[in-house]
Image (cartoon, rainbow, N blue to C red; front, side):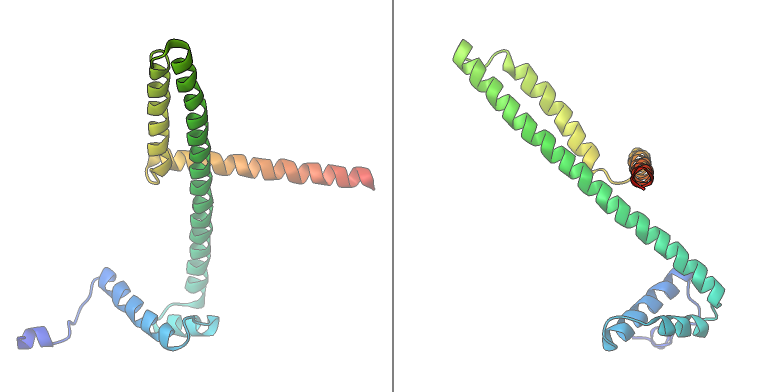
Length: 167
């Protein structure tokens, strides 16, 4: 190694700083049992010159992002479950059609277009299900989220009405 390589770099990009601090925090938290307390986070922020207000704002943004991430996990699971149900229906119905076609015509004739078209539709649905980025995914997620929120609001309203009727 040359002397230049041995010297510590005197300036860092924002990305470099984040990576270095992430490594240091990971090592620190591992040595202290894996988690940091609120007081430790406040102390680290103070040492970095981050005000408590900035930290509170950042924490709120993190909570929002984490909540959305968890909602997207549920949304993805719902989509995979829906695809699984479609695959099961495809298997059952098309098995019946193949057997019916073989029994009646002793060959695969009229059921093949049904199998192929339904299979194509199912393949496109599978591709859409496992596509978890992009504008179409975001629109589908927002529609699902709105539908879920409306359902919860209606359920809450119905519960209040039933509760007031019982009183």
